[in-house]
Image 1 (cartoon, rainbow, N blue to C red):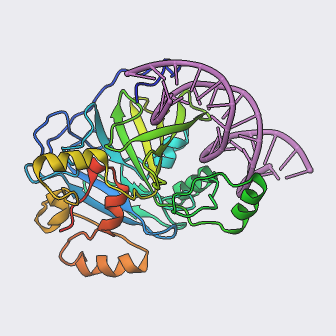
Image 2 (cartoon, rainbow, N blue to C red):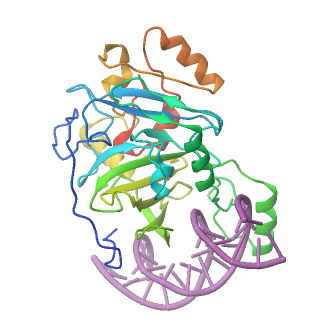
Image 3 (cartoon, protein in one colour):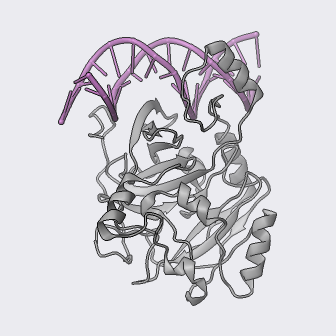
Length: 323
DNA sequence: CGGGTTTGACCCGCGC
DNA sequence: GCGCGGGTCAAACCCG
């Protein structure tokens, strides 16, 4: 995509924070915590709107990061994906304080009502009910629900029929995954091809929000890109849905190095958390996750919710590898 | 010419 | 019921 036009609001000078090393060699590909501190990276994973999972992990030097260098973005730094997305989307609201990796499933909200999270580490992430309520309010927006399934038939229905069908079959929302990224460019290279289909001014923010769809046929994945009002150097990218295909970049890269296209990298901290010197926490309300996490709590290990889900949702440079 | 972007109009659910 | 605001559509435009 060649460039946002200069109709965009003035870009802040990129003030990239302290970075720390990943497993890949290219020094461009680095990441840091939202507070620019080294150390564990925290996140939340949720299964549905009434569940969530929090975890903490550390990028271990030389062990592998969360990022697939072959398709990693080249001009920005991933701060984190966030559960305080709503806060960034809601300028003026109180901050949750930390960046966090999050699946924003839902009725547009990453966390369940009455939920609270605390991560026991040097990077504490706390989500309060207040935050949840705020997020709920902010997340009151909704999307049109297409009458068509994933059969790739994007033909427009007649307005009337469309309306009717929309009202009836309220499809469950696709899971969402939000990234905070320090970048001077809004539209981050993530290995997939996107077609912009809309742009809207964001209330209380000078920065517009752009809407993209995956250009691949039959792939209904969307992403929203906007700049944080609170920190204009931060780009908030929200992915929605699961790619039904591999990313072109991933395919290219894997072909180049003779890998199977389904091979991804996973941080050592995720594949063998027991080796991490940092404490991990996992608090989960969703039963399925709860069982799995509890089973690992004694060993202080973290269980990711669903690798398949994550692989489909997370941008290719962030794919997790099946253990 | 095909594919992507721009942008105003439109749709729709929610809150008041 | 109405207005607001987020999300989407689609025609016009741009560009390689």
